[in-house]
Structures are given as structure tokens and as C-alpha cells.
Length: 112
Image 1 (spheres, one colour):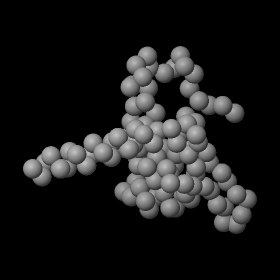
Image 2: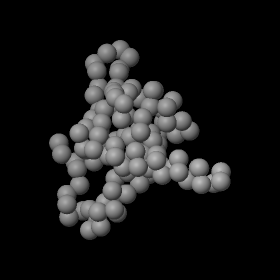
Image 3: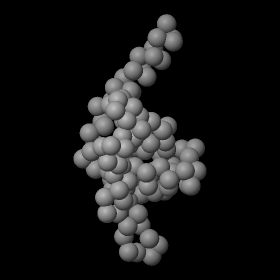
Image 4: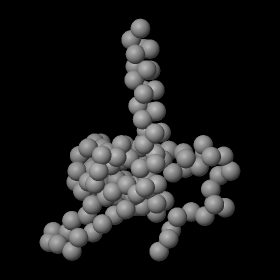
């Protein structure tokens, strides 16, 4: 089932479109933590830090619906769920790298 938004539902401005998909604090941190590879829900909750289970679940579902990550459920007891960035999600790496570089430069500027 494809639940991705249609082109008509997205803002005309490409920057606004990007912000619509990743403009939430938690989504950016989830992307950061999934860039190196697949993680389980508990690992994400620990690495993101400060996010409630309810909010993390909602953000992950939204990102899955947007096509940024995949959720794999394994039929085990207890159930195991893993999250992995899709190719589309991985394509956001340069944006996150640029944000990291800018953040470091900003910190340096404040120390001067």
C-alpha cells in the first residue's frame, strides 16, 4: 500500500516540501541515527534521547508513510521490529552533513 503524498499535496516551494518531511526535531535525529544502518526501536529510543515512546512511534510511522524508512517486523517472541532508511531517506545525508558542519561553525563563532 503506497501512502506517500501525491505531488499535489506537497507545497510548491521545494524548501517547504523538505521541511514538511523532516522539519521536526525528532525526525532529523532519527535520520541521523539511522544513517549508519538498521536499528531496533529500543536502540532508537536510547540514541535519540528525551523522546517519549508515543512520539517516537508516531514519527517513525510518519517517516515510513513518507517513504523515508522501512519497518520490518520479525515473527518472534518477543516481536522484533527494525527500522532502516530507504534510498530516499539515505539521499538526505548531504543535508544532515551540511547541518552538522553549520552547527560546528556556529559553535566556533560563539566561542570567538
